[in-house]
Image (tube, rainbow over all chains, first blue to last red; front, side):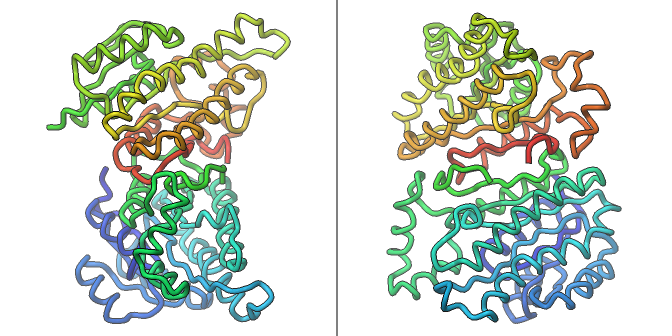
Length: 251
Length: 230
């Protein structure tokens, strides 16, 4: 496959799956515009390593998004793909979660992705570009004490399906990925919250996964590469489940 | 140079031929089981609905080329008609080829893969097995049944590091869709968000991805279908 000189915006790119996706697409020849909340040392380092353009900005601040997209156009002159990978999670009992926390999750994950895509569409029309959205298997199954997160991820599934239908006639392919449990820095947060070691958390999750292990960020990055392959245009509005077999329902 | 071996059924034409070509181009050795002779490294002419000949063929392939790392059950046929016009013979044949053919491949390769604790089994099903369709009752029922078997086998064989998944193509530009078929008319194509048939190469790219890089996929149905089923 060849993504030479294809301009790809990746949100949430400073660590975890976003970073793995950036590295993989760089290997395929893409020109990267990497977004994360702020331009900290880590994001600077990643951009330097991957010769990428930094397009920082908090995507829960919807008014800030047009300027982010504009900066990418000013840098590269076009956009060939948007990989909406960022996410914010806040676990908590439904009754105890504040309005503020609820909306922060929904704003960041669902509305932030929505506006990022909306602002990119005029550019994607010109390149017959592609959109890949990272949802989550919790968006299919729901999850206790993750009502806001699961709702936002379920909303993304519906958004992908609608935009898949709406934008395919314009030559824009929109698809989503619903990862299962992936070994990212979030698991360290889970371990802290559960008062367990990382090894214990990995073992706990692996018990529910038929392949008997959690996934890797590289495995999710390979799904993004599959969906962005210029040879592949028949994937339209699909949600691809990369979860080790844990959930076998259809998104 | 890789010496990995792929088995593709129905490789003499259409999607199967595209899959065989892609694996071949990427350095794999490809064996084929088809009713017709195929342009592969090792072509066996047999009917997938006959367990004995399939099991014999699989053993012969392993003896000739080495361990099968990826088995792709693809052979099938297509027929459109109202349920009231589907004879028992036609119904039985549809299930014998699609569900039985996939089962025969699974029964033949999975014990070998289990002993090696490695392998990927991919069933080519159809979007009609997910979303159904008009006048394809026997075809969509057989394709849907394949999906149930894929999910079950994925659970049973995951502990042995064997991944069982499916690809569910949309209407694809192959000889299974005759030139005068309704699927080639503008009225139908306009109902697809993509406004065109799926190319065999888009299916083979998906199969190639699942067999090689899709290492966290188990029991999944990936459907490059031009938006026919979303």
